[in-house]
Image (cartoon, one colour):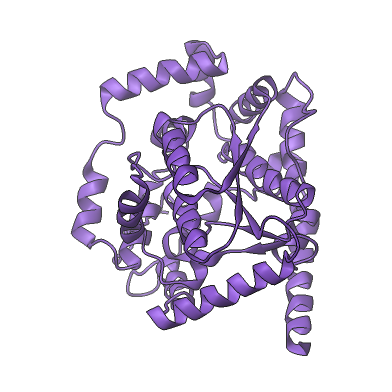
Length: 374
């Protein structure tokens, strides 16, 4: 496919699955129009939605200490959700999954949130030797979604901790407003424990004895069907605006921004700023800025100006490159050989995709039938 860019946003044919209509508008823009219509609420509707969610959580956890559990990273979405649930009057257990890559700013943001809200904080510190071996395995495998191992641990940790603490609801900062439009070819199913185990078996050297894990079936039961511990996304029940949220966080907590989408993690910053562009020809800023533009938060010209800036300054890149190699025990030659090798698809390794996709379709049909009977 020859290079082509959407006339409305910044997505282009670096997304190999992108489709344009006759006027040159991409499929992501069309999907966003449908999704954003679902999460467009006025102030009264937002208030009513939050009151309903508050009632659900409090009734489900009546007699127990906590109303819900929330995974906190120090980033915008989870921090704002901590603010929101505090305003809702919920008693939240904050859970932080420490994978060894926290930035100083992220740690300070979490402390400020705990101090202000009075919420209890539980920190799940991953076994570094195990987790380093797992991250090294994914880098050596040449697959694109290296962040999958962190995302899976985060989600599994929440449901495991919820069960341990008799908490009926997991609340998540996931939202359509600022997280729509990610190309499927740029990510992989975070629930795919089969894929994680297969890649680690191929390249790893240390058994994953303590790494938090849940099968796709269990996670689907929780998140899609509401079986057992239930899953809630409050930011999809308000008219969520990221830039406005950041200003509220600064005013309320003294919260500090860290410079990029998910850059509260030192690993994510290097992954999105160096590994993805160099090895996979992927610049995730195109998605993130297009999302903000479609959500009415920035103009086309503002997004364009941001994209024209270099992803990494040479000085910062040199520092982070050296830190990355040292922390993951790669020599420069080893790492550059991996970077220059051809990328590999996730499904070149074993995956649960072959049976999970059909089950998801069946599950959604059952869920709709049950909802209609209520």
